Image 1 (cartoon, rainbow, N blue to C red):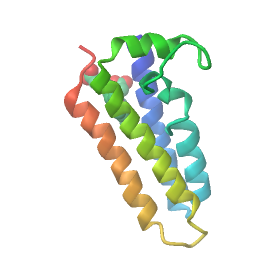
Image 2 (image 1 turned 90 degrees about the horizontal axis):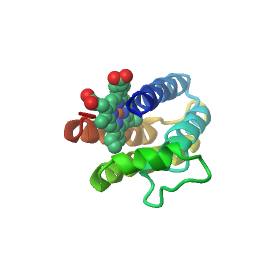
Image 3 (image 1 turned 135 degrees about the vertical axis):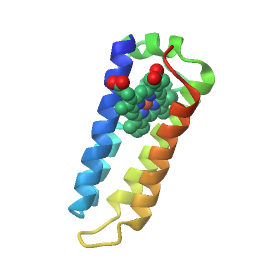
Length: 124
Ligand code: HEC
């Protein structure tokens, strides 16, 4: 379970790196797609943090992970996932050569949400 959780985390980190690479090319649409699919509120990785986490759609792993996380921790997780969806919305609006700043501001908030949970929780 721990290994799975840390692997999820590294995947989050990779997603952030790929998002930044897409933004560096001015490709807001690609950045939005990565954020939606891999970090957003409806991404598979968000399943364990959703208030209605249960077995089903994404299998039993999210359910098992959810049962090991305090409610407040899952709420911090949802804050991050929801914020990633907000970023995706903003990034999708950026036309080639357009102003990336509003999207970057939302991405900054995503990373803040990562940091907030890291400041509060350890696996053991
Ligand atoms: C709901 C809480 C929570 C959120 C949100 C969260 N993390 Fe984590 N993350 C953890 C915990 C807990 C650990 C393990 C820390 C420990 O035990 O030292 C961790 C560890 C990590 C690690 C280390 C992985 C390893 O192999 O050791 C990385 C990288 C990471 N997180 C990236 C991220 C990124 C990037 C985000 C945001 C996009 C994020 N995390 C959001 C809780 C969270």
